[in-house]
Image 1 (cartoon, rainbow, N blue to C red):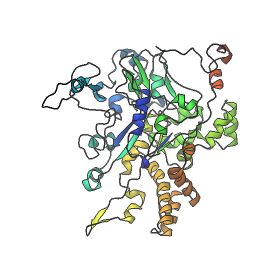
Image 2: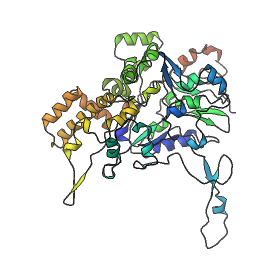
Image 3: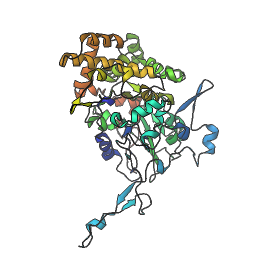
Length: 487
């Protein structure tokens, strides 16, 4: 998956589409499998990026990967109380309102009110936080200035970001990353979490889950939630029932800004551990190296030998995700230092120009807008702390083709950019004009089927991978290994 942050308008349509479809049940009130955060900001749950507090993801110790949150000894000691577990205060206490006061209030001189009532305790509460409490509060000293990604920025950079006339923020939509090396799967004592072999979606088996909740702190993105009514863990399922029928995920399909892309990536499973065992500054490169070229004949032969269907290989060739991540090096993983190898990549935002006033008129400095990457409106190091484990070179590498494409289209459409500047930008980015046109097309003009390249689901092969499909024939059909039912 790829999210193009330059196009996100912060409308939260994706969040509501997911909420209405999957988490409108009891105990899921506080679950937002999809949420949109304002950056700089503290996110949801609050300060989820603070791994000193939550111990999410993996760490490299003595040359080996190990979970930060748990191990054989610590897992047993903390099985009934985990000190790194997010509390309800880190999310929010879900509430409803006493609507009977509105509906049944007698006639009177005062407007009746509906007091908030906790959906957990059933008692009156004072609302102090919510799922999107710091929306658009980029200049707030309470939220924005506490963003963990500001660590390492100079005082000048911090002042630059929070000056009123240059105030900067962008939106960060988040779902489960469905990682190749998921810490939640490794941390589960019951083995309830698993990664599907046919498509890589990470799921929770509700029949196996025993509610130990080791998965919650282990996930560095805090995208596994605990249902306090059923006693089970739940998480984003990437709308796999829709994907299996060739439909796009709900949050992807409803995205107003068309920022979301879905595709197939082929990877070398044998390289995952070594790719995640390199120093932080090399993590993005090692992740890209583990992703294979779907047009390479050797890769195609190896994929077929591994049981990958021809239709999946063909989808990999058409994948917009491969273009953004590997061909153009424009998309980066969120916090790769967690070493989970996330399968959700972000195109970092190039933020708009700062306008000024000239004799009462708005003045637009084109030279500042179409300048070099070292004069970007948001400090590169801030984005590097989010998307490349502090390696600002990776962010600059993602910026260069974006700047080149902008300059070229401005030159073609308006003509106020010298051709020499366009040629210099192309040279600096290491791409040609044809590639710029492809970047522009996929970013701005691509149709739905070009942004959502979903291969056909081969259920017969998926079931065959876990057992003989004929065992189920005549009872529950070839599509299920157990009889469906409701709890």
